[in-house]
Length: 509
Image (tube, rainbow, N blue to C red; front, side, top):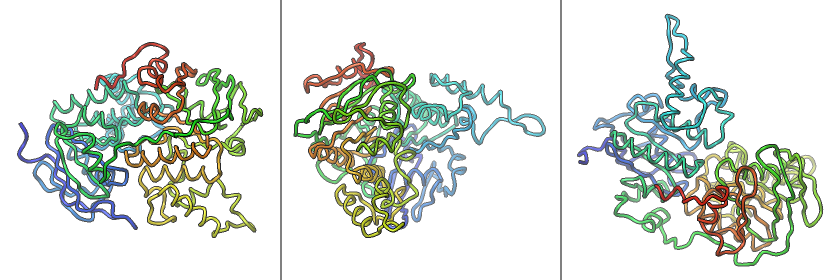
């Protein structure tokens, strides 16, 4: 039976940053034992709202009530003290500490009159939590040695190890395999049965329909509405998010690919990439799909010269080329938008203009200084061409939404006029409206003759945007699907799992 008084009430919450009003009179109500989805495009204000709830930010206006009592959440410690735990989209782990140490960070057990940290107890507790959630991770391993997906699971385990009344999860499945997603959603169902409330932020609609009781939708920093999940539809939520009908988000190129311009032959790099061969045609969007650990990202890093190849050859326009570092790849007209845009793809503390012009900075220098007029013209061109929403070119990239950050990073590579563009998870963590814009950019590039290699873990994206699909398994190519009729979820998963027919884990959600 539903409680009369919500566990959490956030009323008329407003928050401004220089040049941006992130939240304007927003409200949110969450009841005990409820899974409440928070939905909206990037820039809608979701992350700002939960940072206020978690004590990272203080609101300019508004009131917060917890269990019927008005509270002032001025810092993270107070938020945690009343039973709120936030798993932020940006992982908050210490890479030079062990998994167990990260799980208990800030609440380490101690012993003796000197209150010395009990290392043995920390390891035992950490491993107990990992085993409880069936995570195949060693508690004594350093977090910096883990994959992004494993780090995400450690962050989740850390939050679940506390005595919480509300757990906020901001895009918790963005780096997880389908099997791990299923495990996480089962865990959330268990929390709900124990009376723990979960605020769940995700752009994956199938997860929301599988797990959420209610959904609150924000748009442009304002409250749009709250719905019971059982009484709403995908189309209604999309319309509320973007303020318009969104009948089709994909934009596969209509022009057929041209001649073969790029070829990889028997490429290997240690144990993660083994004897890989494939070709790429002009104006093609070649999709790469594989489960976590399949070697997709490692292959792209090797092609771009970040990781060292131990054998194999690469050909561009039938001429053998040698790529020993990223500059060699750039000189060959190859651009690379990496999977982790915040760590590897951009300099977030610098301006939008700085990030866009970075790849062609050498061309902008005259008489030992940057030609500002030429730089301004270049930056304005790509802000307009890719519809990057920013108050100013001098706005720090970190203050833009995820979708606009991604468009700025793509602009950086487009400025160098690449013939080949590698996109690793191009729409990870961005909303459906921004995805549509990214897809339109990709389609326009392909139709102009740019060849695109797209790595994605989202099957709908692979199926609807790729002209061909290559699957990988354990560092090797496990299949190639060339006909449109072949590019199906079942066929892709069959090849990606090493040829074993495997029903999609999402059927178990």
